[in-house]
Image (tube, rainbow, N blue to C red; front, side):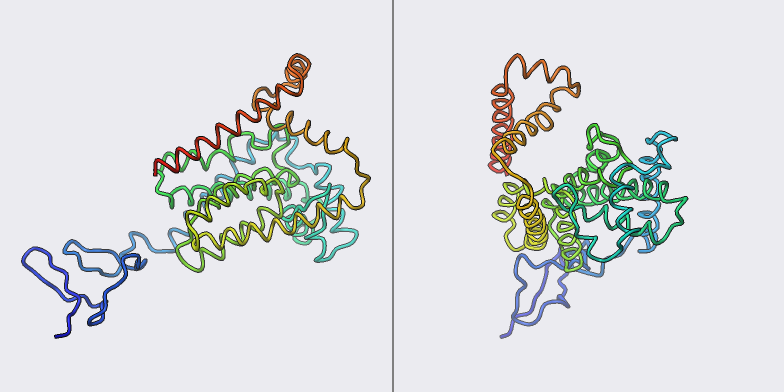
Length: 333
């Protein structure tokens, strides 16, 4: 006798219209377009609001957050072009426009998003509005990053207050440290934060996979320091395996682009051991030291008192603490 999929609930039994005779769905199969009713029978998902309402709310939130970021910029600095924004990115699109500019390095690494924004502003807006348009476009990108982080945090089942808090970090905290906000040249700091959250995202369908992979590639092509997320990448691959392929693939594409750029830059620049040592000291001061104090005089005093060895040991302690926290979190799961 051929069996059929039947689900019991109380005294009533109903035949599932989604199960073929003699075939059971695997336990990992999930229908994203259906929900279970009170009697256990799956049915079509009922959306609380029309889809266009969600799109409208997201657009309004994006504009509101961008205006919040824009309001943090002093009024006299909103309609100006910072050195890199005007002297390099925008000037290149004026003097020698071409698709190749999107992948042309500056200061030894790729600035994909600043190049895209500069080109768009150059061709869309008149010259008197270039400063204002470029400043607001930088704020709009930060707003988009904040909303993306919120969506990823909610997908990881974090509460609304916690998701809102982590999403507010790019907007309300100085992720660019002492660098100016509203400058497209400083957007790379924010993409490093976005890349961290992208690695925690598990796409549920093909559209999300393509979007997440593309965002990961763009993030690394804008922020080369995202390559240092390799330990997190390895952890994500070991834990999520196939589900991590889209984001990890995008990260790899970005790393290849940035790696080739850095390698070509080192090939034409005189190199010595002093450059390597200077880069190491700069990392200790600008990354580790500024987490202790943002005042240069205090950092100078600390280096003079404890030497570079002191900051080096502090870096090792911080890395060990982060590694221990990751291990404990993994064991706790």
